[in-house]
Length: 419
Image 1: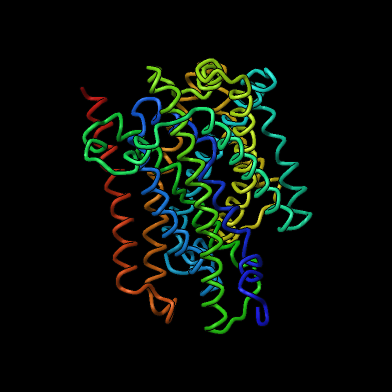
Image 2: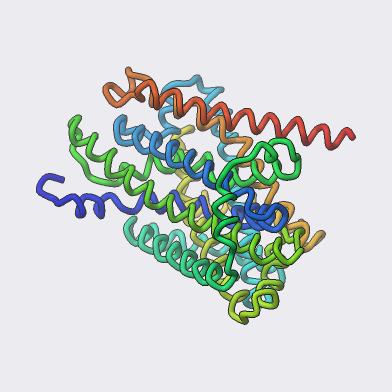
């Protein structure tokens, strides 16, 4: 890193943040953002903003753990906890990865259905073959994988710039939407969507992934070298997550400006959004651009899901499977419920499954967040890089808020079943 200019250092560390950020704009986000925007207008923009700020903080801790200790979060858990505890944490993380993969399977199948009229069940089956794409890219090198991911992020971003332009949202109402209100906690339906947004934004397996892939960059093993590496890796992560914030906010804003404003407040299915966008906006290309962005989003997320699965299994269990075996196992777990739902319940069933998958992600989150905060606050592990007091308090506050919201959701859900 010596002798490089500031901008060259930023470019040298650019990449891992985008591999992580694509998980923050996957099809699961689409379902929760569309449901939130159509039902409640712009009011849940504040949840997207807060979730993104939480993501910036937590991903910053994950990359710091990887750079400073040379161990990813899964390996750090295996080092610290007993074998039964590590195994339990691995199982919970695998559930989260399966939930995430379920969202990607459904999202890709829906996009194929909208663009090419392929039946949902067949679209679900087709997603099994993306393992070939992942394996090809992994064999060609990490930088090529990063370049494809960044290209797909740019496609999604360009598509939603177009959608924002044609939907013409009220910018005053958009600004108000970024201010939190207590009604989000009081309204059970709104809270359910809000926690779905949180689950779709801050993903547990992304913390494991980031702490590992950030180590693909070259940096000096000295104190100063690691400090510089943490700085530039954090810049990469924050810029990438800013793109995720824009795309998530754009989805909700388009839904609010198009559906909520016209009285279509129950648009939760991506297919309904596709059918209504062009007629309501009077722009023929609006629906096609929307579906193209969905396809790019689904394929992007599936690339990083494979990497996360490998890192988690190797880190917790010290077991290395062949990438194609690992990918097929993960995808099979997601394909079975998606295919059954698509066949039996059609579009409405897949939409409900998408939102449920995001709530499952949120319920798993605390089991990754608390160990991460604990490890990065430990001076024996981190030395001078241990979290200072203010950061430790902030990180534990975020972890506590996430856990509390999840408990609140469970209580509200149980009450709903019993009433």
